[in-house]
Image (cartoon, rainbow, N blue to C red; front, side, top):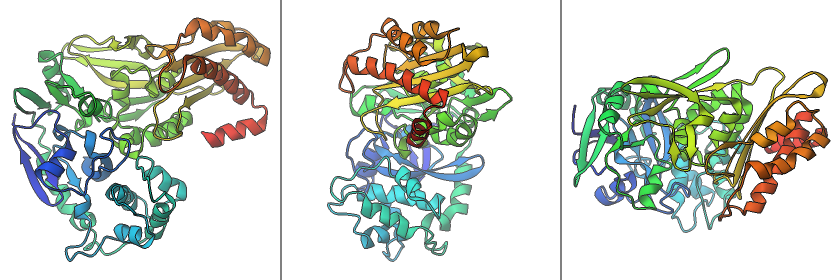
Length: 489
């Protein structure tokens, strides 16, 4: 065991003791290291002004990802390489090609958001040397600009595409081998225990150590990507103690594809899962593209979306409709339960003291089944759901409903099955008349609330309309609507 968090900041080795469990990377950069290129805008992971790159060893290779420094805690940075905008320019002051493209395309006016855009474009530049316009826009989902508009910034991304200066010029390409070796040295598997002002921070070295820590500290706050917990600190000013970080645990980041479905470790991020889910269950892959911005998808975990039990989480309705199961682990062993039974009441899950979410099993829809998930929000991208509905249909002989599973988020205190609607549909012909007769059953299943995202009346009507949309798509008529739905998804 050690009491020191170690990482690399640009080119410098950093060793920190007496670390505040909820101290953010943004505050450390600006206040402790005077790296003020990283800005504070929203302090909730929405605007992207604080974007930096964090490099980590993933499947044995060094991988850089954009993250929001405003909600990234220092405790999650052990054995990583943090890269800020100050690190991009050459040693003689020559701008990096990404920065120069922003200048040449007039992609900056007031300049406040510019460093964040540069870092997002840099992340794209590192990973894709010929991005399409759609890929550029996706990379910029998590960055907001209020004065320049996005066209000059997109043009900058297009201009710099394919530009590859010598490895001696780009800092991450130049130092990749050395940084990789240094990160391997830091990745010792030791458990880290430190803290400040009486509050504690723990970084377990293994999953077994995590189970032991939670057995001793069952009320600890477990943090993976902090895309939700970060806001508890920056917006609600909560004091958390102790905080246990798990984002580094490779054992929780496995993805296994079997004959019946996919097993996802609780630490698998949205971005890590995206390619597999897009190939195996395309509707889930499309849903992930609408969860936060790229910075959120790079660190947010599907297991965390389950564990926090939010009634407006995007993944639970889809996973419940698919019949997913969750594996819970503690020092006493494991237990498996249907995901829909995990959610008991608002803020309450079936998780015993010392238990944590270890993995999820997601069944793959069988041949002949039709699965769809729909997210309704005020903005298409990077927005919280007003409601999210998922449908899995199995038709029998004579075009009857042999089985149907429907689940919604944003309609109740927990993600919840539409049991009355399902019962109305079961065994009946899959026809417009059957759908019309089932719509009133939503009033028995859900009593939604009115809040700033949507009124109760809107949510109820939208849920009913999504059933009608699903019927039209699953029926394959009219084809124009089906194509439109696929394009929109």
